[in-house]
Length: 144
Image 1 (tube, helix red, strand yellow):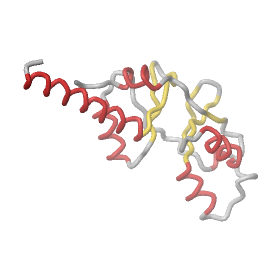
Image 2 (image 1 turned 30 degrees about the vertical axis):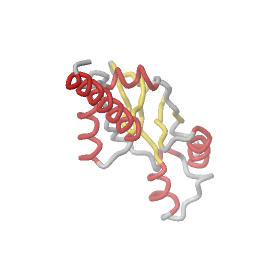
Image 3 (image 1 turned 45 degrees about the vertical axis):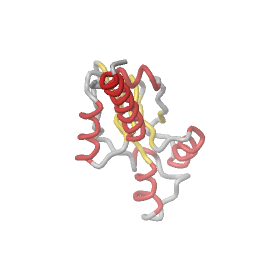
Image 4 (image 1 turned 120 degrees about the vertical axis):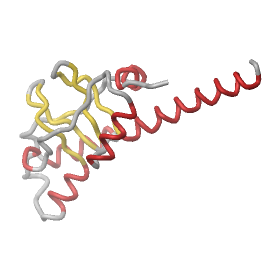
């Protein structure tokens, strides 16, 4: 059974936490902490402008001794965002994340953000799919 991103989003929801590029890094980190997420999409209106993560904060603010209260998100965000389509599979996403060393993938449909998947979402989904497959195989073997 191959699970698509669309199916995963049906289960987990389409909620996306985002921030504007002119917000401060402090505001972004506070929002991430409040929502329990490791990254935020950076949106200008409805358009995806970038993504900002805890990794960006650690490498581009802390290590460079910049002020999180004065640095705008646009200065540390990743603007070349790797994204996926709803029709792509979990395996596609895992391969992309592994190859690009990323942990979050925005989901775009017709250029519009419709969700986001994290490495944790993918692992949970793949484990659930494998458990269903094991149950089916056990049923087949035992004649249930």
